[in-house]
Image 1 (cartoon, rainbow, N blue to C red):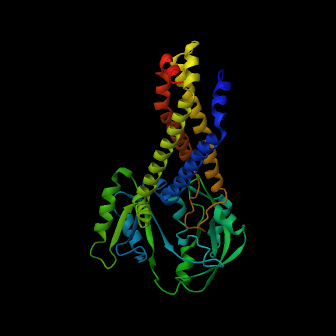
Image 2 (tube, rainbow, N blue to C red):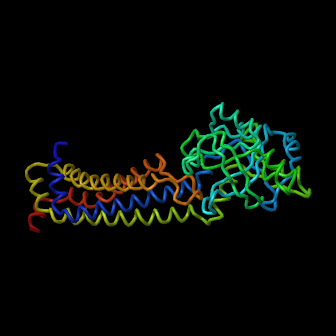
Image 3 (tube, rainbow, N blue to C red):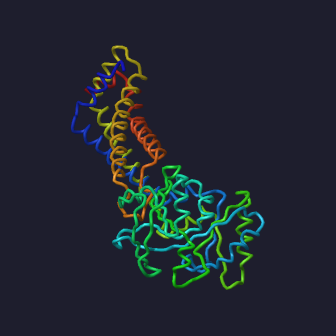
Length: 379
């Protein structure tokens, strides 16, 4: 860069001011990163929900069961391609603070319904052949140092007793945001051993032939079981996932509001800093113009200084946010999708550059329009 010596000389003229401005950008971008991480943690399930899947639960509440006999009736509804089911278990491992999702699944249909979860064929076969077998996610296995062949005791909180499972498979996700913190075990073993709710399941997941026809299928399912002892409430998988996030309040609005306030404040701070820097160098800018430098060059000089601060502070802030997630989920399984996505990183970088440019527009334009005679007169 031809004029980098001039840019850096101006930047480091006031080292304390430079440090504080870069620090402001760093803190702001770190906060943006944390907000983006929380947004992913709360709404990651919504973003990765299958477009062709819908979920059917008991109309009263998800904790109320549905008859196993509904499976065949669901398969007969027009537009339904396949059906699987699962049941929440609610077990704990060693300590009540060790929360993670664990539920019984239909071994014959569950994996086809969720192809985003990848299991090696030999491990899948081992799970199919072991009545007490379990499948665990990669993150969960790393969290508790589990490995294939381990026998782990899970204490039931809803269904009493200690349930021992053999880890026969470890699954991975095709996408970074896929949840790999769950434990699944066979529903037939669960049905055989549980002391109550025989012949009932927790919820059904249905794949439709045409995602565009999901609304009609949702309506048809609920109409099919209307006025029965176990009426249903059906939603698309995306809407079903979003309903859990909404239970925590309007997180989206909160995140957006905090982010907007942070960047508006950052814009004011950076703009004020650049305005002061330009005002302190009026004589120097006038001299540059007097010896032949153009108005555009003066504008470029101010923009370059502001962008340097924005890029440096933005990189530091986003880097710290990324480091913040290196230790994994700090909530012990409550927010398994705890990471900074590449898209959020790109958005953060774009926002930092935008703020850097916007903060320099007014002082840069003032410097560009500066008349040499007027500038020298002020000195």
